[in-house]
Amino acid sequence: MDFPKIRMRRLRSSPAMRRLVRQTALSTDDFVYPLFVREGRGLKEPIKSMTDCFHFSPDTVAAEAADVASLGIPAVLLFGLPDKKDETGSQAWAEAGVVQRSIREIKKAAPELLVITDVCLCAYTNHGHCGLIRNGKIDNDATCELLARIALSHAQAGADIVAPSDMMDGRVKYIRQTLEENDFKDVAIMSYAAKYASAFYGPFRDAAESAPAFGDRKGYQMDPPNSNQAMAEIALDIEEGADIVMVKPALCFLDIIYRAKQRFDCPVAAYNVSGEYMMLNSAANAGLMDKDSAMLEMLYSIKRAGADIIITYFAKEAAGQMQKSK
Ligand code: PBG
Image (cartoon, helix red, strand yellow):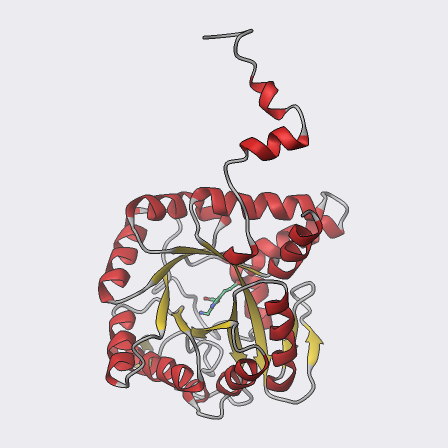
């Protein structure tokens, strides 16, 4: 069969025809919307490094979460900025910590919305690393114990899913065991399983005030040229008890998302990170491209690669646009 029997353009001839043969569908059900909370009251402060993103306080984040839920988005992902940082990041597991209080407020305002929490030390330590430092080095196993404490405190506050983002070895095992021992059998773990040492976290580190004070994260986050290692990381996390595995960032790592989806049966999440978000926002702002269509193109590419879940700062905007186009 060849031309003219085959004319590929027939199936592109009208909007309805294109809709009919469209292979990949985006749904608000796919989205997770990240939120930043800090100590205070009545806050909704624009984040300078991230367009249309805000620092909320535990009281105001509840209303924002209710708004997210009303758009049909099933989950939020919480990041906390504590008032006080120290060597061990102790505010991260405080019962009255900013994330713990925010979870309780959100659960009151939007009980059906899933609350996912980022489990990490970097925003809570005075050195900004994701692990505990002993003799100038990150102590992997001691860090895992602290991460399990953080996850437990989030579960106690009502989190539905805990999401460790530190890249220490064995953290999922520690967290799963701690949750089981404390009877939080239904709290799921979404592990940042294949998380790369990426320059695309730049705007986020500003927003979360979590940049490392010295060195970088290359000793724990993955080296971007590697892909087999990502499969090994994901396999280990599943074995240790992760329910959902994440690839991060998304756009420079679509091949990793694709491979993960082909190989593993559990849901695969992809994090459309701050640098990806701001790259498009900056280009659109400069009049270089149409933001709405470029945004959907980005989100489709992540979905098409195989992501079941997309964590994105575009979630609200995309949900709004998808409602409009219905
Ligand atoms: C914390 C964490 C980071 C992000 C999510 N959790 C930053 C980092 O690892 O340096 C990045 C998210 C984004 O860029 O949107 N470990």
